[in-house]
Image 1 (spheres, helix red, strand yellow):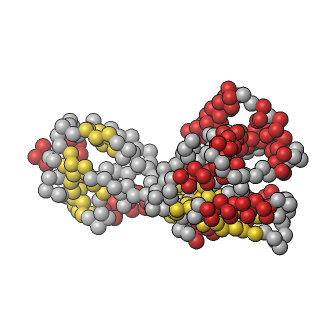
Image 2 (cartoon, helix red, strand yellow):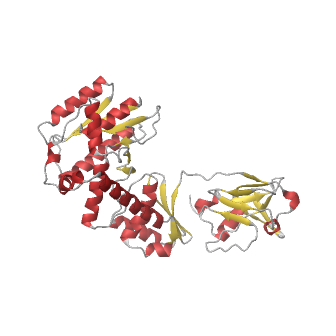
Image 3 (cartoon, helix red, strand yellow):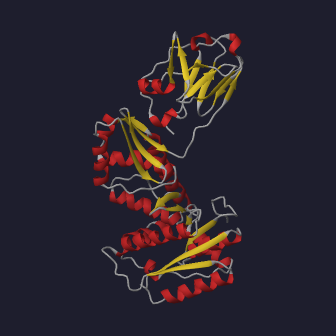
Length: 403
């Protein structure tokens, strides 16, 4: 059994451990990888055996030279629903540990049974869903959560512990049927065959793929302002989920975003989480990662064709349309500087002026391409148009519309 994550021996990792078989299996698997671990344990004092479980976990960590951090909730008063309150303080604790130890991420031992239970509960509630089941990676309370055991069953994890003499305890509250999740666990999930599980896992994957396929990273401001609250969540959450992030969006927050985008300002920037921004730029809305830089530098000969994530280029024929003559090869295609001069017909202008006139979104200006001749002279800058139909016979397609 192996965890589904590539570990860096030079990094520190937080491991959320309750002392149940799932989290103890995860901890033992990680221990074998010989990386730096810090265990985060929360003692809610809800069961008589809580203190003895903490002691047993402490003994395991001491024996294996693993740092243990404990959040003792004795004296704290739960607010409202206990399960919700417990989750809130638990993930705040993990986020604080990640920051304290400058850790790479927080490992959590959710497994296949948890995945299926969550999915079935989502279906039963028939509410709006931005992601089906449990994500392998997301961000909760600024903690970078990774779940590397999602496709192992609970029985497999407990069997690992038994075979490898890994200590654990069974939470007695999980045996009760007071909670809706426990009922689904005992009367539905535990009775599933391997074929039943495989079928429902495929169903979850397909539903999430459909959500991703329907998602965009940009649209017009007009369309954005007309979106329902649920659709705004999908627009933002799908992009963040694909990048391992999670953000809870309230109706009031969505309302604040829309009000900001209704302003007469051409450009508005809203930081969603970490390096991810929601931008209003010249009538369009973009989702971007501000740390993701588009870097390229191509040397283009007459017989060169390029097809990658940034460009589709074939200038073998009809290159004269791009102000190119045969003696200018080889060409260089690279990002242009806003301070460069560009000679058009009988006059010269600054690139920054063209960017303004063409209303090039500011986040694209640092990576917009120019074509340079063999002597390094700028000879062609592709026009930026939102509704552009290229009538050139030569091929020069720019694929990046956001970052």
